[in-house]
Amino acid sequence: MLELMGKPNVLCLLVPPLRDHLLPPETVQRLEEAAEVRWLPHGAVSGKPQTWETERGDVNVILGSWGMPRFDDALLSTLPNLELVAHGAGSVKPFVTPSFFERGIRVTHGASVIAQSVGEWCLMAALVGLRRAVGFHEVMRGDGWKSAQENHGDELARKRIGLLAMSQTARAFHRLLQPFDCDIRVYDPYLSESEASNLGVSRETSIDALCGWADIISNHVPSTPETANLIGPSQLARMHDGALIINSARPAAIDYPALISELRSGRLRAALDVFPEEPVIPGDPVRQLPNVLVTPHIAGATWDGRARLGATMVDEIVRFASGQPLKHEVRPDRLSTMA
Image (cartoon, rainbow, N blue to C red; front, side, top):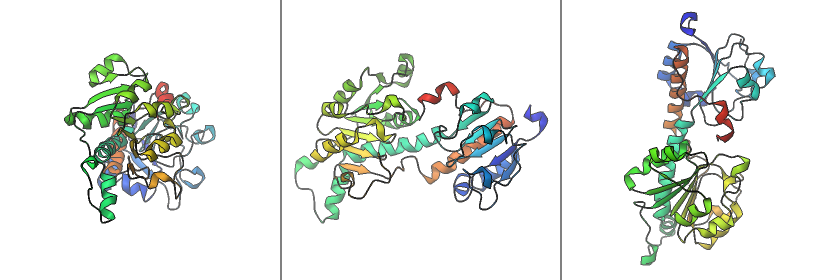
């Protein structure tokens, strides 16, 4: 239908500097070839519609990213022709409302793009964690040197990897693990036996069993009431000495005080990118432990990834404009189990 009606009207909610990160000149050119694009004026705030100062009654598509406003009835009433929101970021939960889908508005997002970046971080975390790189780095910083044979690290090859959920980030990590010939098991009640077989992974029926078996546990669950404290003191106690916990997803899935207790004992290792309180407060022991790699919630944040996010959402808008199926559309029935 849009082919007959002409180019769709796109309202871009991205403002500098984020707009420049996601939309380099070549991506802007592709967008403007496919659509009539309206840019927010200088000083506008993406999450505050009262600052947009632009006509929106004829807008068919909104292109946004982090900082989106919540699309409640009041806002949607000013967008009577809105058909698609292209979200150049991950979770759509902060801005999607029931009215959104009731009005037939579609949404597509860049979670799969971010997943690629997170998968790389998980691979890095596995290698750094197993090789005890953080501890060796700190020893070298203090003018020290290796002191004994027991300080050697471990290799990733042929390790037993336990994945909590087969989400998009877990799948990205799984793909990157292929050259290492790891044995991979997954705890995910939503993963069917046939899908697990197609992916080349084994389903585990309980978290307790997964924790007792794995050399590495990598968390990939969304934040929902069902996923709170999936790994607590009992599960941590089941993990064998020297096991590594990777968390690049949501902090609530792992009992943080219990984890810190195990890490302070030196029995386990960890690589953490997410925390119950962010920023992590000064003096939190997790900042000082030599058996822990800590990063400030940046697993999915890379310059390359941001450029891919913008390009992927423009690809979706081009598909929408030409009547093609979207590749990254969010289905309403899957929203409750998504991150």
